Image (cartoon, rainbow, N blue to C red):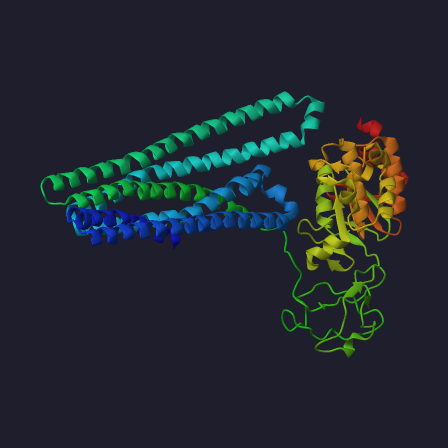
Length: 601
């Protein structure tokens, strides 16, 4: 609205100036001169005020669109979770969250100026038609022809911008990979190889940028040349009418003002077309990312017996000392979902105690607005099993899994942590029937792809624990030497992705953080692959002691860690083919070939 008011006030100024000349100066009417002079001043004030409000609204639109889109991208990245790196390249997310949101905001902000330009052209054409139909017709025919000529450049510009955008995402992804793996590249002497690849990709991006610039150069030239030609034609024809007496001097001044003024909305219109083209390219990339879906369902079934979201329905009646179990889902404010009958010590089902004013009593006594406080599950351990592989992790024990292929370890960890759909169960309940938040609270998968975030080391490692627990976890992970080597100890700062630590140090610090989470089930994937055998032995002893009575599953081929485990499972071709103690399994040739370091060497 402000953009339309702004251009309307600006469009009427030449008409008011022309009236002041004809009715005031040439006719010698001082009153008319003052009247139309005041109209020019009033139109100027309205134009300035509307312009300020238009720019303010456009800036609000641009920033609001950019930041809200960034929020949606961030939420989508969190929603995809572990599936994100498998579905989207790193460079794609960086470009979407930095460049694309800016282009999208600029495109939306440009609609205010573009719509104002359309209204301005229509108003000026109407005034010109009323004054001289020939000049009005010239404008009405010239503007569509000019827009049509410019539109011929939009399609190739859109196509080349799309190609440039894709190549920029690939180049950004390669740069991220090089920076994150620079220490490894230096260790294996691969810097030159990756530098050569980056130069080649950079040259392709440069060529794509030049191709875009060629079309943009023609586009910018057309934005200046075509409006200028139309302005020249209008002024020439108007001057001819004055010379032949068909138009007054004031009208000529007004027509010249319109001709000069038309250049601005015409340029704005063509600029809006360019911005909208860029915004369309960015919007397609963003919507493609937002359309991605997680690899598995995000919630359990709706609670049984609830009268709709937010209702407090009557819980299932109590049927014996062991029948009431922990709810597996929540809906609104309803504290109950479908109970699962308790099936014995190994079952997921667990008795519930209640915090607050409601004692642990027969839940059948409460109906309608049940005065239950928040249920707190009794943490009885439950077995974790993957039927597809035949792997079962006994509760409260330190279990190690030796996989013939590292890929099998990643697949099994993803299944048991519910990072992919599977038939894995915790107790008698399929993980797919549990809410994701509940799975994450009870099962933690820690691998060597986890990141260390920038900030104070204490806050990065401690989580919700206290300093006493943190000290024990540091000793268990054999990370005391890392902390003592820092100038400020635990108060020292961690660089982005932990770049100020070596690979082995980052691995041990990640282990400390995982131990501090203290989940019911902790799954570690090769937690000692970057440390020496002596440190491995100390870590195995420390983790085993700290996690006593808690379920711990370690995927490893280290004989030191395997020898410390309570139970060892050998997996070949994603199937559990043997199990027992480390010493017992050494009689199996296949197992011995995988874990014996001297043979692997």
